[in-house]
Length: 355
Image (cartoon, rainbow, N blue to C red; front, side, top):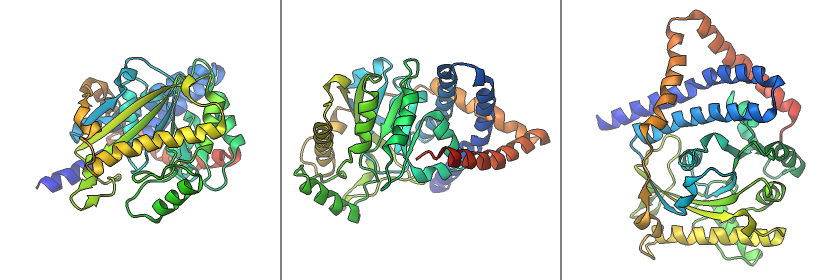
């Protein structure tokens, strides 16, 4: 019975979140039209508020409905004031972006999240187009075009636009026993850098371009290490939970590096980034191999998120979905948004050649 309840809860949450995308798109399109004659920073401010509202809906389900416990350690003082940052994190799951939400909302910056994303994600109906409009940056693996990234970053330099630019420097998810691990170790050895056991060797090029272009618009770098509690088992490290996975607790370590402490030479930056990940690797080592008294889990604080921060988003999106049951006009608009919004988004992204 318990497993049936969990499965039903998962289906409802997923259906509600994805089902809310077209209604979000209708509201956002209205604001986009209104703002055409307004300053770009003003459009971005309301856009960030709308994006934040949707991400709070996600956290309503992940933190308040599932009962997920999140423990934080490290430089927790960073949650006391809003900043514009470059955000690095280890990458192991399709829900790593939810962890970014959980960190950002505790600084009241959830609407400012902008991701460096795989080119293929622009194919997501509605989402792919919206992410680009929100300020996310698409990159092609193996065919990286710095000019495209720099064009996107120019917009984010506006002093009234705050940003959390999220990069997963490993480039792909860490999966235990995957062939990519050996390739990663060899890359570190060839570069005469320490070999990582629990992470892939970070790629520096995209991160360097962001830093070089945005350093005068950023306050800090946040180096985030995430551990899903479900990944430690008696027979060794397990694969991290994915979109259909279930996890009872997550441990997050945040290290804040002031922007003026980041090396301004590319080669030094590459080494510095690798050493950040080397320190992260030691944190993970202590968790998975029990070499130390678990520095993340032992000192972690459960910074509970108030229901008042996420419930209004659920109520707002529910109020947009309920009319589907009795308004044929709203149903027609909803379905047309799904079809025409997706098609129009694909055409626009193709014209813009975003990566």
